Image (tube, rainbow, N blue to C red):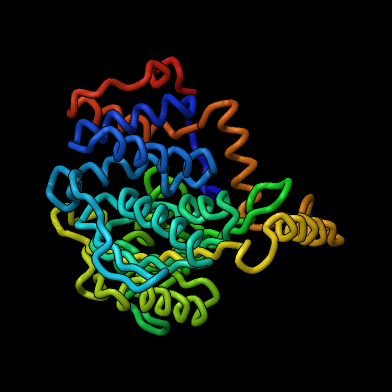
Length: 364
């Protein structure tokens, strides 16, 4: 969920938002299928309330494409493997395209072998990890996704300069009658995209989100964006982000350290981002329906805990996002006008018309 506030907003129907983003990506050189996938991925993030990974990033992705940092025509392929473990070369495809290819392979291999490990190199920023691991949950699997960030934004614990990403990971497991339990988190207190959104909307940030360039905690979003993010749990978050880098990047030779360019500020540089997907077919261990029944019971057990006075409801990971998704799928997705106006300008430069609901009469 977002930790920032919007001023005036524009409400877009889910399908209109997806179609708009797909047309923008097609105009930048992607084929219909890849453009639709990329647009759908970003709009799903917004519908879930994860605006930091939604269509606010479309201009950055398209700039990377048009400036040569991403190849819109690249086709990922399996280049190495042994049994249920394979290496995918994304060939500098859009991260969502490489991740979907890897997700499909991971599901196929887990169905055949009971579990799978798909390592990805030559990729780009894959968006939200939830999008990939929830496909595993929908296939009655438990899914894990690890990825190195597109730029260095975290200092080693005790350091000042950025030498690591806040490398995110996602885990999802299905339930019987409830949405999947999904944890999707960066290893910083807050994702840098949230700081970027706060900067765009003029919102302050909490003091525990970021350090300025001199290593001091800051509530100024711009100072935090150009400084470093604070690791979640202090040295524990730092340790977790480094271990994530080991399995997602160092394992397969993807970019690490000074080899990582700035995703936001260097559109011509090839990122060579690495990911790791691991899926477990539940039926290989126990009956999937029984597992999902146990999941329902476990969730109910946690939610029935006596609450502190200030707490209205106890949630499990991903529950707030799932509710937000259903709500905005039905009522439309609220976007800050700053994001919509930037996309309208981008569309004008590409010859892509915006949905009629983005006109000034829709601003409020």
